[in-house]
Length: 245
Ligand SMILES: [Zn+2]
Image 1 (cartoon, rainbow, N blue to C red):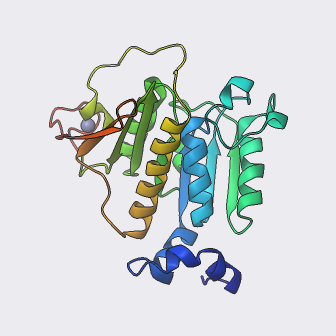
Image 2: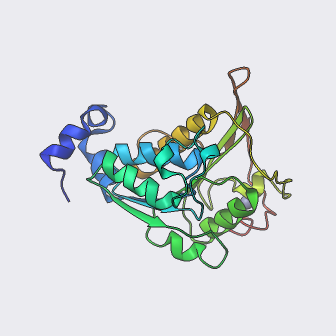
Image 3: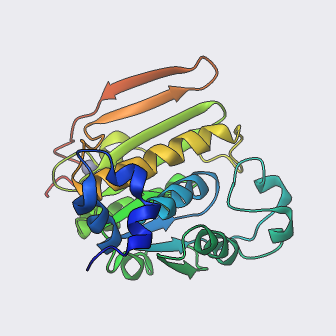
């Protein structure tokens, strides 16, 4: 697999990073990422992954675009309201970068379909708004040894942690008990934009091997104060999900 002259031009600013180069770009081209949900987090992550040239993006979301999504879900416009999110998202991403493949799957993520959705992907990016589904993804990623980039927002707060199964704490090590789930997640759109962008950066680092993934620690962003906190996270040897791995 090679890069066309057009691709070399398109990705010039990242290929020009001395630690990145053509080699990392080719790794992105060969890679596949599952964007698990294309809401606020997934919109930002998917845009930057598409722009960076990740060869295959698999988008999964069962929702339709609503007017109240538009304060944060930057993939969509007013004309998309009422349409399935994955098809509107795929159209937008293909327009941004026709060099990549975008797969649109309009399903709700469940215990029974998650393993199929993981097939052939190198990294999973969290675009969820609830922990029930995050834990389904976390467990399947641990079982199949797929890196999972966890991201979440609530109000002015954002969180990020990258999980490499068998090596670093998983989401269950971090959150042993199911948290209370709000019926909707309030937020200022720039918060999921920020966290989603960081998730894309984590995926790019995992795929290319350039830089260092954000593992064994949790990033807490306090958007109200513009403060960033990093907390060390340890693996729980008795974790019911990754303990024996
Ligand atoms: Zn664990």
